[in-house]
Length: 268
Image 1 (cartoon, rainbow, N blue to C red):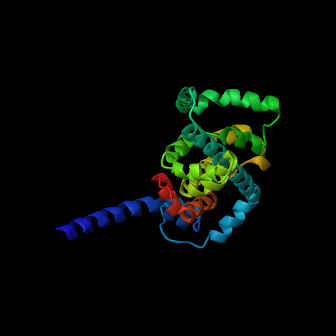
Image 2 (image 1 turned 90 degrees about the vertical axis):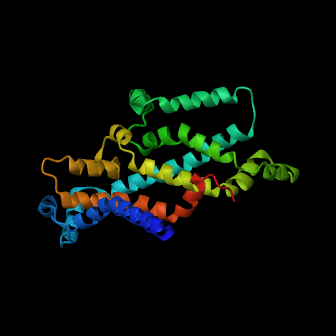
Image 3 (image 1 turned 180 degrees about the vertical axis):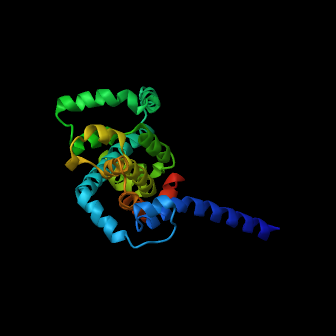
């Protein structure tokens, strides 16, 4: 009975995994075929990969877009990890009378849709002269209520004895944070890094508004422009999508173990 149950569970997981991986497999196959073959539903590897790559490089500024996406994602992720972890650490470790009210207001901001703040953000960055620059895309994302809440919740499992021991050894509050808290919370930082990097890398709406020239556009904007053309070439689009997807896949698999630990709130 137990073997049959285990077999059923494994069979179910295999089916779900196959369904989840099918779109990525379809992209890999599609990038080797012509647009007409993809429209016909051809599900076998072709010989058009090099031609599709050449056409993509000729039609777009792919290298520049990749650099723009990498710059925004990496810098935005670093700032988010530092600032959000400091805020989450402060909310959980230090006690004050108005802390809970301030945190409640912070949580209320999660209920506000981005469309409600999009126009004020555009006007503000326009007056500051920051439009059409990576700074305009990075600044609105460096702190989010969700990420502060995420660090705060994981800090609940942080052993306070380590802080007390550090204070006895003469460490000030900044050194306690950088030398005790940050190394101990590596799984949490890894999970936050994956979530933030993927959000920044795949960000579409605000970069579409803030980045107004071709040389400043990111990869998602390039893919969108290819797909919205009058006669889209699906082979080229598949190549662009694979190039856009690979960095996030690589980051996830590199930090997969720490991601699971961080999502479970474990501290080692």
